[in-house]
Length: 404
Image (cartoon, rainbow, N blue to C red; front, side):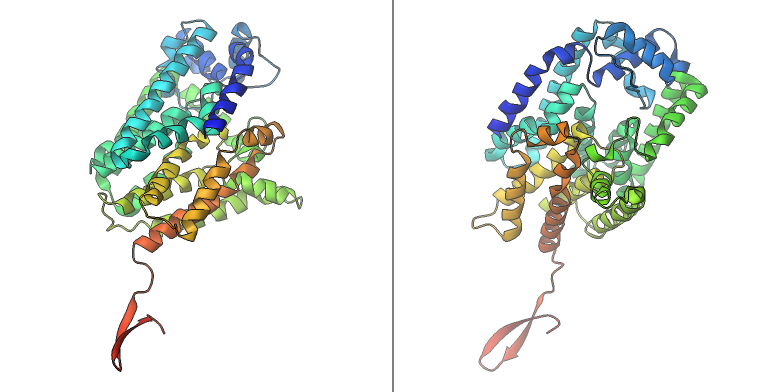
């Protein structure tokens, strides 16, 4: 992990001029903030307007669209940053994200073993998606923090707070709707009502910022995202969609990508519900594992997930590793597999090489295995295995597995 952190920082350092010149994604947030500051909210999702603004302040402009396609309420903090020059705004945004990463670690601390906290800090900082989120100027750190806060609220049985915090992530709805589905399954009405109420408030704020024409423009940007091209490249996605695309591409069957993605997503979501029963309590370690499974499921079924958004996976990684390290060695086979895959996930520069070759989806191959291992851990701990039936044999009690 130390080597991975140093390698990722070295890569970011070599790209510092590209960061200053606006080659990365912060440009889309910055330009959108400027559009709103200039009173052109109704044209926020007009690609021609976005392109013209991006030309004005960054050298890195190329004749391609780098569109802002999130709900506009997310830009409220950017209204202040957009008043600074681009390099200063990017630096301030990076500083804010580093503070948010510190908050993520602080909020997770009460739920993990104290002696392992330095390891967990390294896990967050050295993970490739974390450095990518900071370098690109993306919002993935906020998404991860909101999921951590939702977890902490559920642990403390603050269900309404959990629903409201989850709704704040609606700027990327594919990362919050799967958890809302779990709330619905559990009939957690206080969380659902809070989610809907907060969502309506955010919708009203967004409507005030861009008007109906603006929101319709946003919808026009969302609809083409079901197909490859423009800003959608499944081969760069760390989820079922990416894995389905690169696998089907080998046989020239990429037209079936969305169908296969849907089927795999339904199965994954169904397994998550099966292992998170409505009667489950929030106070025990088993709940931690169920939340880890839910976040892993969210990453897999999310229809649009690039490298930086993979940062949310540090949540299940930390939770599962914490559970393993509390066990005495020798570790079970599933624990050894998890540890091995975790080490592979931190091999320095391997994801960078796959990204440069437009093949990052291959890096997501361990993710379904991580999901299966966490599911197996929950199944093992929750007593889903058949209990041995004790029968009286001559002279002794003999354990015979149920069904035999």
